[in-house]
Length: 114
Image (cartoon, rainbow, N blue to C red; front, side, top):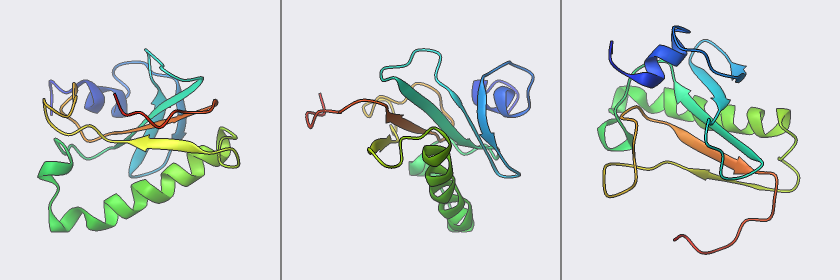
């Protein structure tokens, strides 16, 4: 999509600090981190959110989850633990309408969700 911020990052028309990339996904540092490690992992294919994934996207979603593991290892948060979040829709807190996972770590995270 021409007006999608994350598509522009995936296409490298907008700069980002990329920490991992392969043929299907790209992971980059969040510009407003809430934890010492805060990375966004997105598919290069535009999908609005988890609410709009199709059956044809199941392999891509599996690939994304396996990529989270790789990124956690690269950023050395795999042993101590991390949190993976995907906001879905306006009430879920989604700001950018492109499927993405927040990979959060680098400190002990609480159990409260709000």
